[in-house]
Image (cartoon, rainbow, N blue to C red; front, side, top):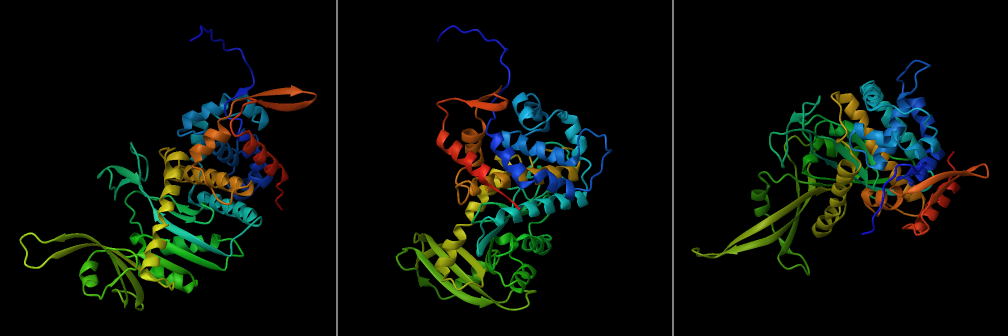
Length: 428
């Protein structure tokens, strides 16, 4: 290794040059104007920062990889970004905390409505006639005594405090259609009908058919009643408690070209339901026990679904398996976009921060979608590594600002493609 000397003398350097793309994209969307018109949080006219400024700055922080309010100092120290985005003043970490503690339940709803308005702008550029929406909940463990963090269902660390958010994703685009940030002791299906109503209200115009997938936590008669009232198709996994005895009495048929698999379908009315519904089930032979027995004993793994789509049991089973992608998107939001990781001591502040992180994720999805990708193909961390964490120098020459990147920059072609596509975007 060559002997080197380190000097801290260079100016106007950044390690997050790719945020310039997102800055242009956000400016084209008019995000700041939308946020300021929806958020009713009022501060003095001479205040240095408004609530919408805190939201937008945190979006850039999340895109840059920030996972704690204190790490927003990385952006504060980046003179290139501050010059490009006209951030003459930048809040301290404590100021960010105070700004988000101004959020109430009402303001969190306003933030959600602002995101919905942005979505409708995006979907005017290209929309789907039929969409698949995946409902799921997740556990986000915390360390400390944050407001709303409670002991509840936690398969990884029983007894640890957590939050229990619920999500709705659109499978065709990978975007998060809606979310609720909830205390950790909230049951998965609590309020699911109200949540579903809000989801349907946020579905962009032009969508004429909705197909809903959800796990057994959403196996609820009222939920199914609401989906049917909306004309939605659904495929919901059935809770297995007491179900194996019922399924063992059914007539099973072998699944073609799938050794060890059998299927059946039937109608059944659960307690408290308004009517019987169609069930489809698949079972897989796990083990045949013969030792010490006169007759062999067959051990099966069962999969059962309630549905109103005309699928065969095997097709329903394969269709439901694709729902696993939504669990990846949730992990991306939680672990790669800091949703539920950046926390304060205030529940509604945490809710607003959580929604801001989801908005940052959706902005990434939308920008990639409108600049050449039909849906998000890369993980957020991959996009950050290739297109955001790019070193550059900002120079002023010939009365214009120039951002200088390496001539051997990785993914140079894709960078230029995104830049040209963003420049060509125009929103009404």
